[in-house]
Image 1 (cartoon, rainbow, N blue to C red):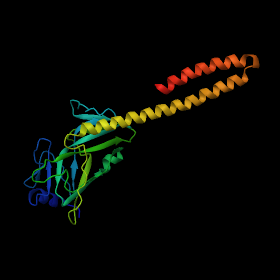
Image 2 (image 1 turned 45 degrees about the horizontal axis):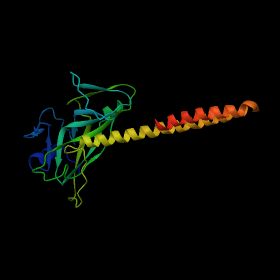
Image 3 (image 1 turned 135 degrees about the vertical axis):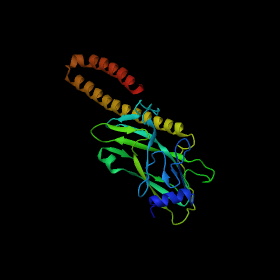
Image 4 (image 1 turned 90 degrees about the vertical axis):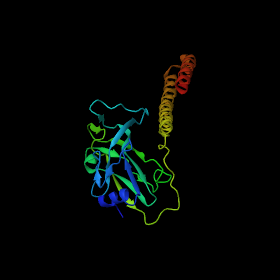
Length: 244
C-alpha cells in the first residue's frame, strides 16, 4: 500500500514509523502542517537539494550567491538531499523522477530505501540524507537550486510484514561519503588509464604496419640499414607510449 499525505502525517505524528527532518534537525511536518517549504503531495513528498558534489573530481561545489547551479548538458553530479529520513521496519520507499524535470532532460537515478533506513533503533538513530546522481541528458543547461523545486519524489510503501533480513546500508551514510568518492575517483582513473593504453596499443599497431610497408617499398640496397634505423626509432617511441 502506498501512503497518502494523511498516512504520512499519521506515520510521523501518531505511529512514529517515519522521521523527516532538515539538516539542522528541524521537523519538516509539525502538527499536521508542512514546515520550512517542505513539499508534501497527495501521495509522497519531494526531495530538495542541500549540497552538490562533482562526480568526476569528488569535490563539493560551492553554491553561487543566488543558490543556483547550472548543470551543463552531459554533466553528472551527486546531490545530498535537504530532507533527512528515517524509516521503521514497517515502511519502505522508492524514489521517482518528476515528469517536468524528465522532460527537460534531468534524469535522477531511481532507487529504493530499505525498511529500517538508515539502520539502528528508530527512537535513537539520526535521520540521514540521501545521495542521488543527477545527469543532464537534455540539449541545454538545467538550473539546480538549493532548497528549491524538488528533484525527485518519494513514495512510501507499507510492508505487509517486517523483513527478517537486515538490508545492507550504503556506506555513504555516517561519515563514509569521502571514502566512497575516493573509490569512485580510483575507478575513473583506472578506466581512463585503460582507455589510454587501448588507444596506444592501436597506435603501436599502426606504427609497426608503417615500418613494414616502408621497408618493403624501399629498394634492396637501402632496405637493411633503413629497417634498422626505423626499428630503433619505433622501439624508442613504442616504449614511451606504453610506459606513460
